[in-house]
Amino acid sequence: MAVFYDGLNKVFKGVADFLDCYSRSEILQNYFFEGFESFAYSNLINKFFLEVKDRDDLDEVLGDKIELFRLESGKVQQEIKLGLFFSLKEAQIHEDYYTSFRDDFKAEFPGLAETMEMVEAGVDKNHLKRYLHQKRREIKNTGKLDHNFDLFMLTTALEAYALEGMGTPHEMAENITGIMEIVSMKDVVESSEDLFKSMERRSRTIIRDQRRIQETFEDSLYKRWREPLDLLESLIRISMEAGEVHANKILSCEENKSPKNDAIIRIHARSLQIASEVLVLLKSGYADGANARWRSLHELAVTAFFLFENDEKVSKRYMDYVAIEKFKEAREYKNQCEKLGYPPLDEQKFEKLKMEKERLCELYDDNFHWSYGWIPSDILPKRSFKDLEEYVNLNTLRPFYKFSSASIHGSPRGLYRLGLMDDYQEKVLLCGTSDYGLADPLETTAISLFYATLCLLNLEPDYESIFQLQLMKSFVDRIRPLAVEIQRELENMSHYKPWI
Image (cartoon, one colour):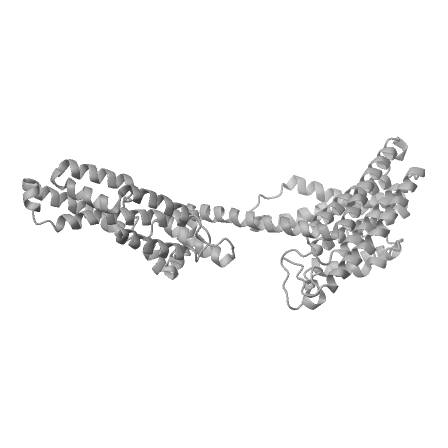
């Protein structure tokens, strides 16, 4: 008995060692275990045939059934031959197969029942059942838990190979390169639903693991940056509540409904949404993404100030300018929809947009269709965002805006990462999260949201709105020193790696 199980243990160790080289895969575990189970029961049956072959009295015991025995045993030996080589191309040699074989042979050839019982006693059939149950549990622990793309692709290829039934587990272990070539063939990949399902299953495992890592990282980041993050979140909430109350107060009076009020209220609402997006990105460790979103918030704040400081006609031009942008978008879509494989634009809708655009250009003249054409040239001749900043005296944030623009537009300067300290800029390619670099977007977001809210609350100002602005200013002033202090602490820590 010991010899039989020693042999099985050696084979199982080889299987486990092989599976440990790849990502943990239920498909490969089941595939190899089925092969191992077939191998075990095939050896048990083969052991019976070897014992029968050694009997000197076989002709006497079987009598006129000797030819039938040879015929039936030949069929079985052909089937177990595949099991002995770990092949799963035909029926698996499992416990039910063995039980059926044993019962059939005992009934058909009762003279060999004693030999079969002796073989079963030597192996202990019940022990074999328990042994295989234990090995099924053990094989569930094989495979690497950490994931990378190369390992993911190789494991997925092996899964596809197994599911397609392209060969034996032994052949799989011996021919990894060949398997990759077969599975990577275009026609196999495109036609294999099993491959897609396998990749989908494995991606869910990777995603779960990554989410756990990200959650742990975010908890650590929040503990470090809690005070300025909470202050920014409170500032957003105060701005939202104050803005809602004040906007409703303005709009409740019919005579207060005007293009300027409408534009600034809408800009404030959009500013709140962007500030909330920045907060989410900061809490997740994406300082560069937060900085990119702040850029839009800054543009809104500057626009709000410009509208606030000018008359209703300017706000009306601003709101009407949406027709110019819609026409330009429609024109671009019309030019590219065929290449995109999208349905063509309705010609009537396009003509309607074109007519509205032409009407407004005729109404306002002054090159209204230009970029920033909504700005009257007699107020701002150059009509650029930079000049818009200078006009409303919000160009102090220009350095931050330029840096953010470089990142957004794919400039080589944009390859600089806020999430990396200067010493790491040339050493690390940051493609994930980091708990460094949050200070700038924390400060600038607070400032720009305050400016957008300032414009709204100064429409029909009252004692309450003035008090709310003073309160918000206190939050803005507190955020910067706290954020800078935390960032400097990180810079002074030796051997600190802030990214994941």
